[in-house]
Amino acid sequence: MILWKIKKNYFSFKGIRYLSSKKVSNYYVHERPSVKEMDDEYKKFLEIKKKENILSEFKITNIDINTFKKYKHKNNPTFSTEFKIFITGFLIFSWCIFAIYLTIRIMTPDDFEWVENERKRLEDAKKKIMIIKEKELKSVHNQN
Image (cartoon, rainbow, N blue to C red; front, side, top):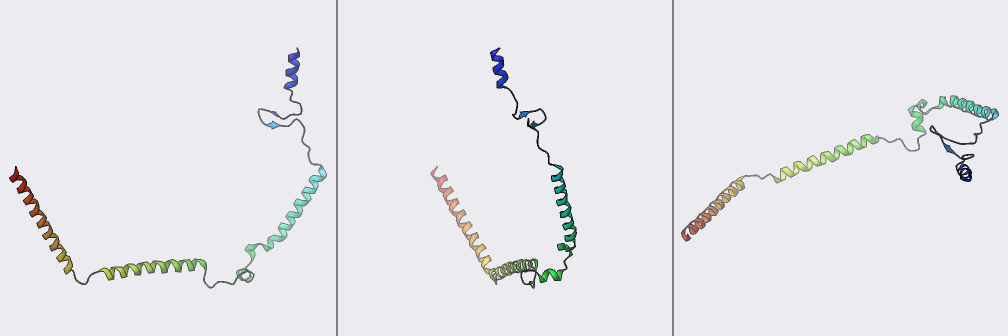
């Protein structure tokens, strides 16, 4: 009997938030706004709506380009940013093409006689290597 009272007092949920299967709710009822507060809110809402209707004539999209340029805080640039970026990219690209052209022009030889000389030199070197290998093979066979 005493254990029952302890358990009952220990697990009482009065004044404490409790869990429902659907939501967490409070034991105490929330205060609702009064009718006067709701009327005040509605009046504020109507005032804001009136201001929006008045200001709709002065939207930024209704300003013409000359007025916009007049009240801008910097001088009107002669060239747009996109055009400047295009010109910069075009100049860098042109410089790269010019550098490649000059490299090819400077590096190409006037005559290709040196190529033939190199080919002859490589053939002579191959012949010498073959002669040396044949001599080594003969010496190995002679020793056996």
